[in-house]
Image 1 (tube, each protein chain N blue to C red):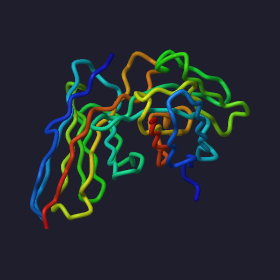
Image 2: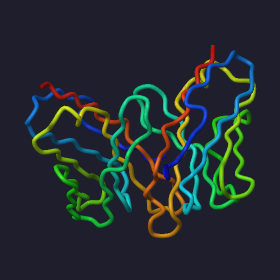
Image 3: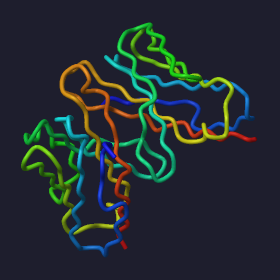
Image 4: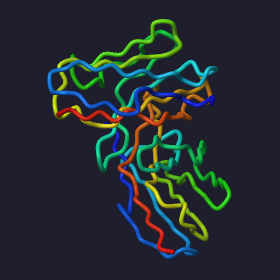
Length: 115
Length: 112
């Protein structure tokens, strides 16, 4: 499978716990994006990387959210001290650089439930 | 931030009917894209539009980039049950490195 891969598909956690999600982009794509989607809404941008550089992170929802892409390949999104309002689908996408960069290819997402 | 307004929010149609949905913005966009999302899955790209006035087809799907650059529509002809899902418009703003902005979606239900 050469698509965007996200793990885990589902995560149930208790309020206050930390969670980490992983995204493996399409191999030749150098841009990687994280979005969040709540019920009845479209995906909401959080942050993105070009190779290992995080180019935009001001849209991360709070300082409890952080993302890394240390070697420019896979990325992780961590949420510390989770709250019930963090419950959502977390989507990862990747794209080619340059003229094709607006075509985002999404993974299947990680559904987070905070109890 | 940029807002994309999709209409209708939801629609119920009979199998075989044609469908039309649209997306508008208060500001201009450089590109318009249409995605479809099935329950529990990520959005899948259907069509990408790059020029004002551009009309592009993908099978039974046709989409147009409005000439004002502030709107786009998606048509589906001869709908089938597997067309059920949520359709999202998305766009990129000319301001620069702005990521893809999404509308709230149109939920399509097809009655066999």
